[in-house]
Image (cartoon, rainbow, N blue to C red; front, side, top):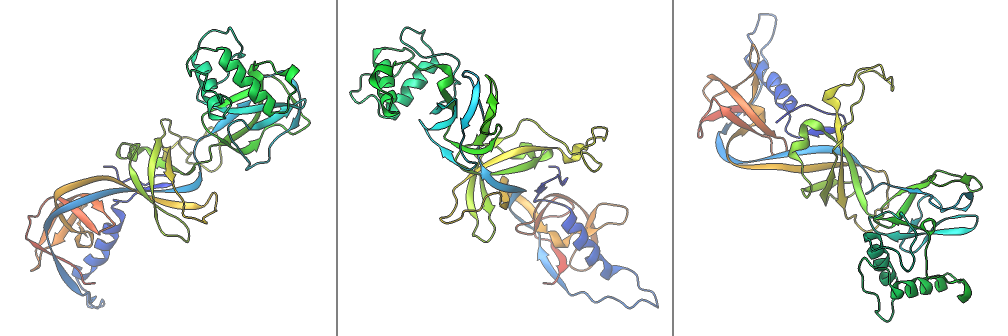
Length: 367
């Protein structure tokens, strides 16, 4: 397992802590000179044991919202006459914006609107999606719609009922929808940015606004070296500012890595540093009642792997070995070279791959 520290992400099983502790602890055995008084360090002991090692990944993140959606205009060109405020939530059937005072409404579904809806159109998954929305909004009170890929008379009747709910007079109710009248998105939209000011001109394909879902989530950057240790569905613990830790679940691990440059700024001539490459990590959370902070910094602890019957010693027992590597001092004074494996800073334990056997006793700084 890599122990590199990435930008915004830290593997909780790191080597820096034992090295620092070992160097300080090793000072007690350094040879004394007549001019240097001996350092006094209290020594304790710990037994080498077989136990369970939990490997954890710790990342820093920001509390926000899951998903990222772009709303493009697909209707006739015109002037943007109304748009929602940033932060407003728009649900199924709600008005996203208006062009020349004509509303564009939101429906839910993964298939984007790519054609007009009318009686006699060919079958397709977009028809099923439309019918699901009409039923969910209550415009099929007599249960005559069969939710399928076919646009039937019951579908047209439901659209006319929806039109009536807008206040459209009977003679203007067509039972049809043009592509530009609706936008399909996978979830209700929380508006994060307006791309066109009210009064500006929009054309087909113009991005009008962007947003997210309404589901709270932590967005973090995970070191690419740690990507293989984190999976969708992993349970995590999230530490919030001024609140007790809460549970979360990984819902997405990014596929595309980004790397920062070694130099300051965004100079494209600067080389990228692969050690700082990260992928986005999205974690679903349920916030405690009354917690209303947005963009709050959080810390996420992810249990990457649990291993049973591992030979363990306290991290504090490790000493820096002259020439490189690590050693421990057995109770009685003998120094033994050891090869450490994974570290668990949450319990202060380190795996010993070689050099020791269960039941031996090693020296540690007294607590």
